[in-house]
Length: 238
Image (cartoon, rainbow, N blue to C red; front, side, top):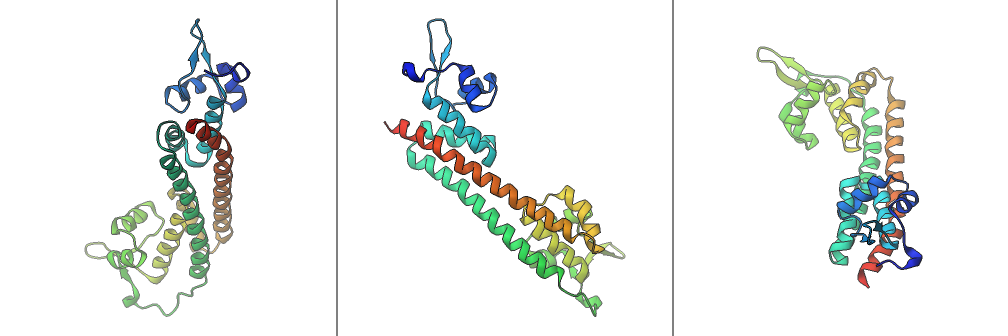
């Protein structure tokens, strides 16, 4: 049971965490907070571990999303420390991969955008399967991009076979790099027509910069989670 010094009501935890009273109850229900002690009248009594668990969850949710955040904090309560820490390591690793992918996308896009498309011959075009193999994606992915209007090939009669000219293949390479960097289909529908006309280089850079800022914010949230998580883990090991 919490000591008198650390006794908190549901509303006290909610205020210190910056959430609603119902959210605190929901976190307890979902196992993110340990079961609260109850008074004779049935009121919940929370302690320092409950508060630190809620703070850890809030910070983690800003980084990993609520589902994974709950999983990590529950693991701290219910599983060996090594398993809980492995989940945290995986969150760090995902952010590192996203940063690497973003850096590679910046380099690739700069190279692709500077490539001249000259002296084009019919034999230079590529089929769906050829371009998919070159990009390392499924042919169905290219068909989806075609349907969305973001990387559109020519259609050859009589069966409407898809063939990608060098310029169209370059579009697909740009889409591939932007998708790898976290760019969504919706924004690409608006971006790619402008990019083909040479009017959207600044838009691409702004999008990648925003993506970079988002990763940085999530990294900071993960860092903020380590202090309350460490407190909860230390309490669980006693």
